[in-house]
Amino acid sequence: MKTPMSAASTSAKNSGCKLTIQICFYFHPIGPILRESDKKGEPKDAMKEFTLPKTGGSARINILDGADLPDVMALQEATRAALPADKKRFILPQGTAYFQNLLTRLTGMMIGIRAEGKLVAQLALMGPLTLREAIAMQAITHNDVPFHHAALNDSVIVIKSMASHPEWRGNDLAKNMVSFAMEMPLAQVSDHVFAQISVGNKRSWDVFARQKFGIVAAAYDPDDRLPRFIFQKPSFGFDFAPTIIADEADPLGDFQAIIALTQREGLVGVYDESSTEKLSFMRSREALNLMPVIARVHARR
Image (cartoon, rainbow, N blue to C red; front, side):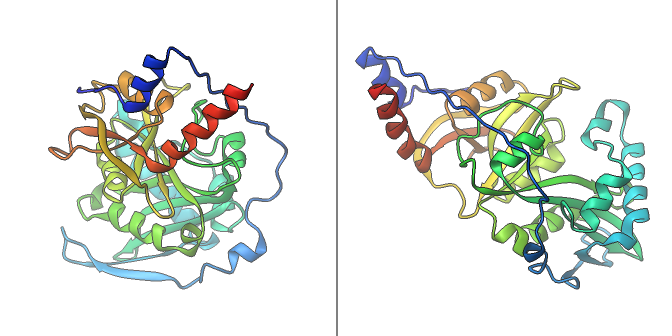
């Protein structure tokens, strides 16, 4: 992996000074996540039809509700059952109450794809939450990672519990669901959308990378110790500085370096120009603009 020293790092080294940036999070009890006014933005009959590229049949994406609970639970079980033992953690098991709260719009919402009368794919949109609330609830990740590209009071949505029936894979189900989810008013009015995905689940995180999400953190899950990426998409996208700080990074082989690049350096990972099997890491202009302000605050102290 190529990692040329950034201009910011060179300046700090030559000046002989050492800056320590410390971020403290203070949490407080929170009330209901989804308020009544938020629910009105999502029409019950919102839907989209498309042709399945593999089978040639038609499919429909729409918002799910409480009546879909049996199908949602059955799809989760069928998806997990089809995975080999070492990949079952790609679909974290969730109980009835978790899905019921989403389907009744208490903690977010769910969308699904039906084909031939069957629910063949689904995902959850949790929120809206402030980033502070999402961290306190561990809604994005169970890891203690810094969020360099969002403020604590920013509004966030978290995409979770994405599943596709094994018999219907190869029909761009995840691609169409994520695209539809990003068009929902719930996502459109939020400041950021997040998702956490196992690094080994390339099929899933490829969808987010192609939707212009960036890798903003990497960590080993505290429960199963598997490597995971945290993806983020700001409402107006990332505004990258033109210089690539590191490129040709292998998602698994360079995972330890990616942890440092995203958590310590605050870089954002995107597909490398040469291959979708490699990653490049860049600085967002917003992060560059914040760094001098933080430095001045600590210098005065």
